[in-house]
Image (cartoon, rainbow, N blue to C red; front, top):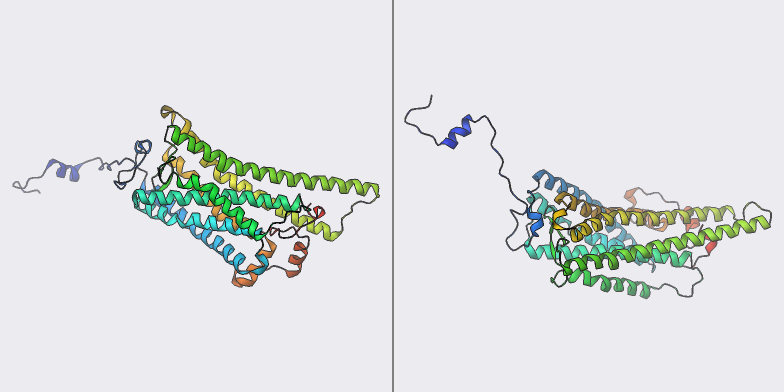
Length: 386
């Protein structure tokens, strides 16, 4: 029994005797952001995400970071420490691993923000995060483009007088850095667009809700000059490779008919051809993975930049999906490109034997004898590229 001389406030009595549970306080997106951080008003109209979603993304990104850093780190180590793999063409593969590794180095910031349920490091942290992401993402796109060009040069133009050297490969990579620098640095100084938090406000990217000429022109130009052009290069190179291989196979069949034989190839040549087909399929798989990784981001950016304010369709959750696919590509690249490289597997077996990779020396030698492996350091003949 409650003593008569003891009084309670109404809300205290409600706490003990209420039939309905207490309602959780509702926060809007960005409620716990640092005061110096600019957040586009579009994101502030949404309720703050459930902390469970933040924690889930933090766990997913932790797994992606571990896999990507280990995979790309091993690729960088093996290619750098093995003399047989230090070829001009393999510099592109190493550069791709470096850009993917760089992309994942900023992931701890996202993970920390996720478990904090919001941005922590303020405007400067957002700018650094966005700049690193722009450099790593765009350079990864162009590394895929130059790898496809190298495949085209080796397979479709085997007798070209222009030979790829280390100096030429380094010059091409430096050219890529200079080419993507305006798209990475100008937003950092708010000269052309700006870096702002997106979605759950735990990652930063270019502001695709900046509905003026400055913002929309940046989105269009980065799409055309930094995404569409590498895609066109990639597709043109692999189409020319396919056309060269197809034409050569047709010539072999016609010659076989004239000679009244079933096939002009020896068993060894057929085995080499199957190896080259596998390498081409691997490279094509990388391109499909590249498209899978970038297309969601391009769609979200275009919808955000060019749709009217009354018809905005992008939710915070939708904006987080493209960022996740981009990070996933950094995990897959080393396993698809390098693991399917016979010479790399052989060196990996020697450098890190506890990985239990069993690569046959004889098989590796026969596969590499046609001189059209991914290293691309020698000039092949077209008839070994079926």
